[in-house]
Image (tube, rainbow, N blue to C red):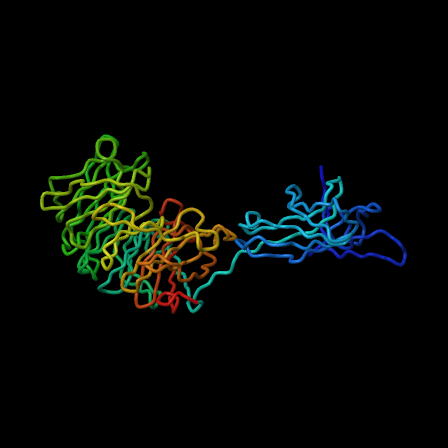
Length: 475
């Protein structure tokens, strides 16, 4: 097995020219005694002692690396991370110059630089590739409200959030509870008597609908009093009782909701179809569920005109479903490819996906993509987003390819109509997985965290971000 002894950053190379001794490495290294003992290079062995530059930012262009050392020969080659030979120019017995291509510095990390030939004991040094800094308006503040919640909804009328507080929460378990984002204080609360799930608030702020997962129904409560109103039984099928995978109120009609019905514990879950309810009565025309219909549709978004409904398959990735809605019910119109949860912006009239696609709902065509790879190598895995047509900004939250640690995230802002990158800020120490993001107030963002499946988990909560970044993301 080959061993490499690092000289830079960790040890000091002491060359005693007066005594004629070979270079001796001082300091602690793996396998050394920490008191200056350790292997001594054989007489005449090539060694790397320092580099210039010693670090570079990931994503930079190709460059020339100056390698300083001892006993270099015209045939000596610089080796990148022990095994990749770099194009090397011999300058002198103590200096080499190596060409480092951009492909080798695309991502952050630390590599070892040693000279050829490879021998059992190689004396080299480390080269560091750092993550590019985030560029954004750093004027913002963040707070976290601990709560185990299965969903969150924003009420434009009362200017507060409502949470479906899970049974695992220490207080207010199995309730719908209000949260004032300005103060971070919980407000009115109503017991659901069952594990609450998806929430939807009518556009006039008169009602909140809550999917009751254990009861197999959707319950309606009045706002702001949170008084129990009506119950909407979702029925059952051959695989068991249905629950609401998603609930969305019809724009301009506080008594009507669209529901995606599913069964827990099976895949795909959405086998109960898409239905429109007026109060507790289902309209006759429905879209069958997966297996007997077009495919699983488990996330719904209304067009503000109340005549179009958009659905996405987040479970199997079968795409975007565009549906028409009338007094008779709901009917599938077209199907196209898409990925990620959807968000409709009434200012632009377009659909925006968490994956960064911009879709014209009139045609189902993708008309643009946000350059999510512009931020530290791009988002690594799933991101969530929210558009704001009035500010003309799209906000994305996720972990980048260069994020260190499972709790560090980034919020990146883009021009909503030109798709250009505006700025980004770090969001550190996030507990859980972000599942839904909102714009609130004049300069606020909020997101809820839960487990990998979007359900509330211990230690999670609501994160509130506010400040100048939200309205002016550029640095």
